[in-house]
Length: 195
Image 1 (cartoon, helix red, strand yellow):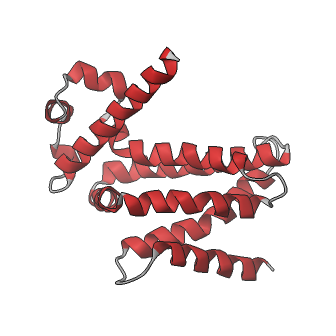
Image 2 (tube, rainbow, N blue to C red; image 1 turned 60 degrees about the vertical axis):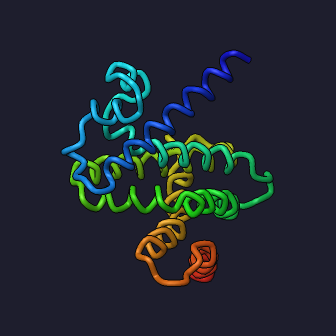
């Protein structure tokens, strides 16, 4: 019980630090904001900051990393009879809703990534981790080893395309477009092509 409470507190502090960092970085270059500034704005010491994050990049990507882990868990929890693609797509819908619910943070993060070469490199790592976690979830559903069998990684790559398309189109700011509708349209288009 105490461990669960401590973990919830840790996650709350991590989320708070991430929010503070994104607020500081909204109008500034990533490279110009220091760990000391983020820690001070959050009411913590530099040392405390490093108890929660190994780097300044990690505090920015906390939101995306948590989303990837939740997606993996949601895919594994889907009904066993669902195909891998259907399971991923069903699990993606609440994740997209989380992006929309926290639209300010999502859009601030995207703009930050577009402005910072250092963060774009870290974004590639984050995307690879997302693909790896989805492949791991698919492998568990299929009873395969995703390190030895190509299918889970291949299916993960295919399954995530509608998500990438929907988020990219939504971030581009097309007036009046609903990201859920875009995701559904992309999933349907992929399904037609695969058939």
